[in-house]
Length: 158
Image 1 (cartoon, helix red, strand yellow):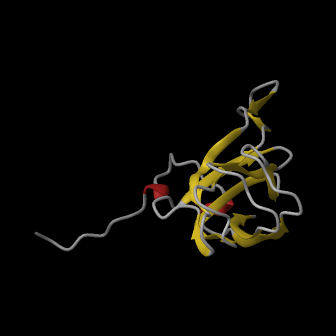
Image 2 (cartoon, helix red, strand yellow):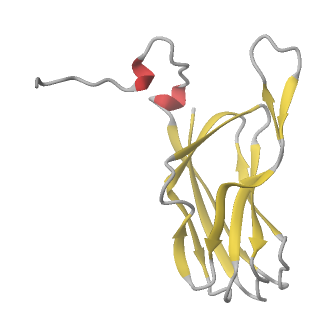
């Protein structure tokens, strides 16, 4: 055995690098809503829009704070369809289709609590031409009248 020095995979010369890999600026989207009308399963909550370009969503500092919404209420978190450049030589842009559960699935908001979107994932990278709308979709049961939801979405951006 010998003492070793280990470099990250991103140090390899063939690794595609973006500024967010080493010097991105930490930013947040903050929002809060009160359900003025009860929301059926499938109702959508617009959580905010990530800026265009390379954006890295960070799971650890990304949270929901909710009132007790009732037994079985969960939220799925995803994004609306967005435009991206397929590659530098492509004549046309690509469209990433909407995915309602890409970022988090079945986040339990039945009881009042602070909830992380994921305790297993570290990051999610986007590259868009016009930004990405982040959405939550009600699942499991109806959101009651006057339920509250507050959120903080952390991301790196350059």
